[in-house]
Image (cartoon, rainbow, N blue to C red; front, side, top):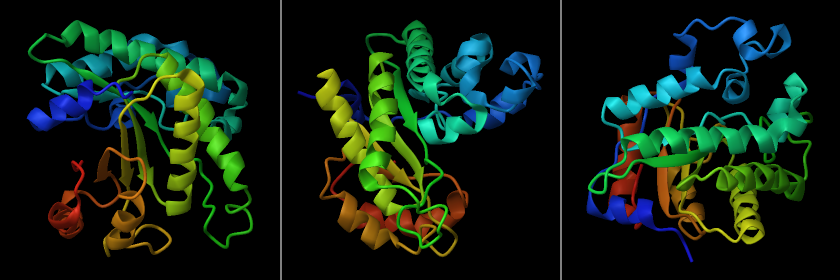
Length: 254
């Protein structure tokens, strides 16, 4: 049983997502102190525990500007990327806190006619499992899926309305993330809508050469509710890929 509130709203109208969270946090010119000390400086995801008011202010500004959906401050909050800061064991706490924080802000702006939604952001792990790079490909599929399971379960626990696998550069990683999310659904007993967004370069391919046709063929057969593109080139270079998806994809597009 899926919590369909987001998909029902999407069926009724176009929903507007927020903009760049990291960029707007940078504009606040936070100090190392705000991040919890020099060794954590620049770790935006840790702000949800160290300086939640900063994250809250950005979420609120987007909702005030008219957004329907805000993304959690968890783009890099998985065990692999947080290990760079020695925070890998704080991953569940960070994700739960980020989701609960965003959910609280969204609730303040929600009305019965216009609910506001929280998307739990799952960014790349930093690994490229389908590459031939000896360092970046060094991870087993199951291990990668488990990295995403841990993050997704915590985002669900914090009260997200949907999960967003985003800025994906490796189709094999996307499959691992989807598997991890499904394990998290089983573990928590909660099923949320799943939105998946890949990143294409100016030639319309993912980092390892996958084109939009292959992305569609692979992902449309998987348990994905919304398919889309984000980041990297900016909108003008996305038009051809978006047109391709618009003509052929049976799912809602982001």
